[in-house]
Length: 311
Image 1 (cartoon, one colour):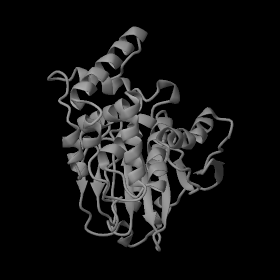
Image 2: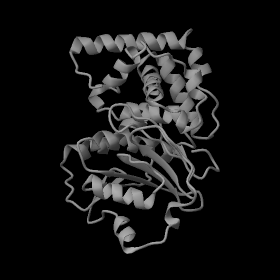
Image 3: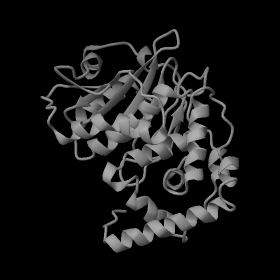
């Protein structure tokens, strides 16, 4: 998040491809996950609406049960068990991200509110943030003065909760230690780490869409992605390409990986790191051609394993 901005929203599609959302909300910064690509221009703060019994009820947060896993505190009105696979995996996510990206570990607590059903979650979001469209999950970086932010995640329990939490908690881990993250990189990394560890960041649907879209292989351009500063410019295609660049840098050559890691180190000290493209161009003579070849190899690997792609 850029210094001095009052808020930002990142959004992903609710089912196969997700897009992003950017908007300024007074005194609050938001990172969101779900479908569509929109820009919100709220007329005022969400909490300015007068309270009433119905709204007060909708704003009630789940808090009967809590479970701490690493620096993530999960709160719910249903029983949480620490032996559930989802919590064991999420407990390893912070180390997975910081180790791969060579970032310092953060002790900052992230509060994760798990609503028991979608209806209760939707009522809360509509009451708390009426300007926002329907989304499956949100990450909120909420300022509380003196440069301190509360890191919050809201979602409901369901079939896709593990994927959604991996995506949103990736945002939280990054924003806990970096001054800012360019929108394409923020979403590209979240798309990468939302995949279970055994997939090594490979998103089957993204590969299929990038390689075989309605008009053939997608046109690739890192320079174009780096010019995007508004979430309304981020569509599913941009999310897919952002993921692809991240995967290339992490699994291409040591020099490409080094270019990404050095860029992330710059983001620890500045919110204006400049473009990454020149560093990658020093590694690959033709970065876009290299990415296209990388995707072709991934496609062949997917075909060999017989993995099913859900579009």
